[in-house]
Length: 170
Image (cartoon, rainbow, N blue to C red; front, top):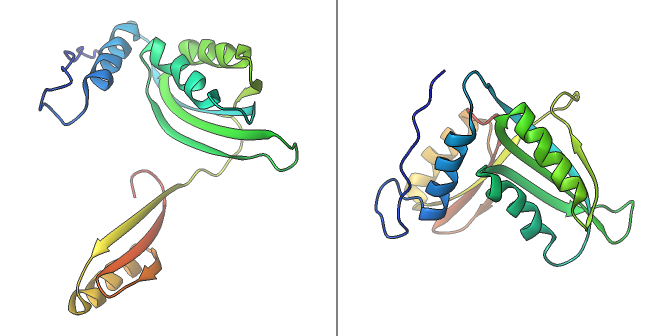
């Protein structure tokens, strides 16, 4: 599969709505993708000290190599006080992502980094939608929510807040 590099956008460019930093990272990603390398989606788990700057240093490991974090979840690790768990999803060649995991494991506040890609796991995505609607439109929106098995979280006079979980495609 041959991919053509995308030219970087300047910060003021209208292009596709992405800022210059994102476009530069995408161009670097394209350069890093060698011939014959397959892109795979990887889930990385980190146990980190709950300290300021850990998230920035973690994201810099990806950005320096020109890779984008597709999904990021951070929560307190209640079993070990003073620590947090990070779950990062990204895509790229397996060998490059392996190197990124090794680099993450060397960061000062990272206690442990693990590739969960081949583990048995259930993965879901969560989206919250706040929809402006009148009382008249509400029933139609609730019907669509029901079709997609969404959950109504909040109802006000002017809005509905809906939770949707499922695969990325959904």
